[in-house]
Image (cartoon, rainbow, N blue to C red; front, side, top):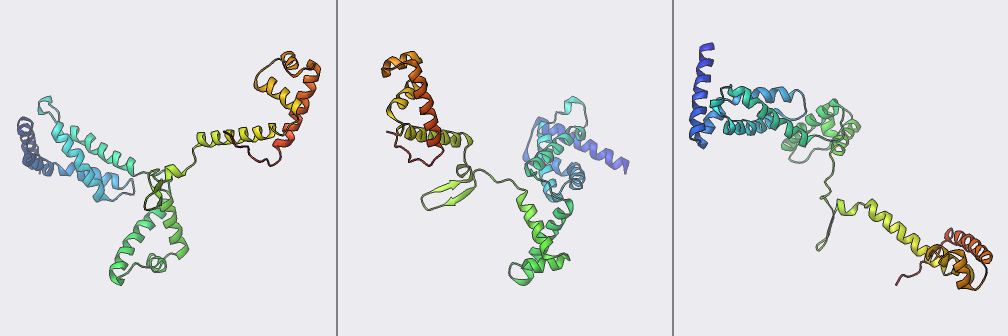
Length: 262
């Protein structure tokens, strides 16, 4: 057996040298077949550490093996297996990261869901229709409620894409991202509504208090300059300001007709 393995390694290195000098798809396929054991071993290992099927992991691993074959330089003097394994592992880890979810569910639920999906396909083939939850639960030997909760947990663990269509009219499509409120836009809208409400309340003040508030708070006049503008004393402006602010506070706490901004 050791002699056979040594012979295979020798043949493999010879093929790798030939491929390095003159690459071809035919030769690359021979190298993939020759080193497929690396992929199977890694897929078997990962399949016991995650919920993804062994077959999917194996197929992904071959992408890593092909990449390793294409990049391997026999003149560097190290074993191909040592070079290829990180590529194979990297492809599988990348695949698992893409398939991972933000929410983790109990392993029993994941195993129950996977088994339920197999039973669903088998029953659909036998019955000629999609099976009921009751029929699937009966085959799983669990309650209907547990099967439905398991399905819901698995479905809800997957994040939704912001590009997913939530409204689909003939001439209009709205994605989830467009339907979700933007915090910045919502804040701006809230400020605009308050500004319009304040504008409407200002219009309901008595003339002198309104002038005092506009001059001092909006136009940033000093109370002395505001007094000259209104034709009164700074002390009186202070009283106008106090009355104007009090009236505004009362008006803003009540439903107001929004003034139209032109």
